[in-house]
Length: 181
Ligand code: SF4
Image (tube, rainbow, N blue to C red; front, side, top):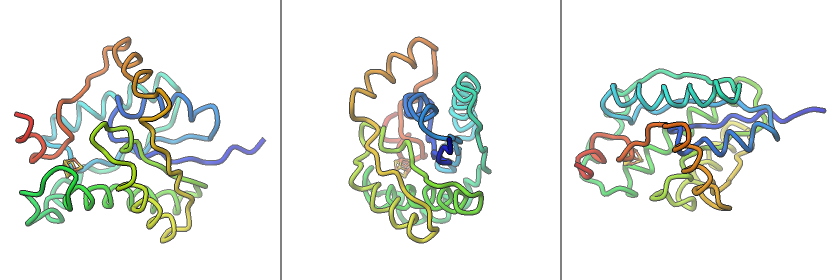
C-alpha cells in the first residue's frame, strides 16, 4: 500500500516527539531539521542532537540542513526589538517553512508540516497561512495540524521525561534568550 511521503519540519525534540510517534505509522515520514534561528551554536547542536536521538529510536530518516545563522540575522535586521509573536517571528516561521516546502517539492514529497504549532506560545492561526502560502508556491500539500491539541502536550511531556531529553527554556533566537534570562 502506498504511504504518502511526509516531510516534517522539526524545531526540537520536545515539540516533535509525539508527532513522530503518531505520523510514523500513517506516513512515509522524514524529519527536516532547519533552524538557523537557534542561538548560540552550542544550543543549536544540543537541540539537534536530541532530534537525532528521537529519529534513531523511531528509525526515521532525518535531513540535516545547514546552520545558516548569518543569513537569519541578515533577514531579521531591524526587527531586534519585536515582541515574541510579532513580525520577526512571522519572518522566522516563513524562512523555515519555505525551505521545508521547497525541499519537499524538489524531493517528491506529497505533503509537509511543522512542529512549530506544538509550542505553547505559538498560535497555529499565525502559522497555517504561512504554511499554506508555500504549499501553493511549491505545489505540495500542507498538513495544517495544531499539534499541541488532542492530549499531545501531556503525552509529549511524559515521553520527554522518560528519556531525559533536553528541554530548552527559550524559543531559540538571541532575542528570545535575552527575554528569558
Ligand atoms: S522568538 Fe522564536 S520564532 Fe520568534 S524570531 Fe526568535 S526564534 Fe524565531
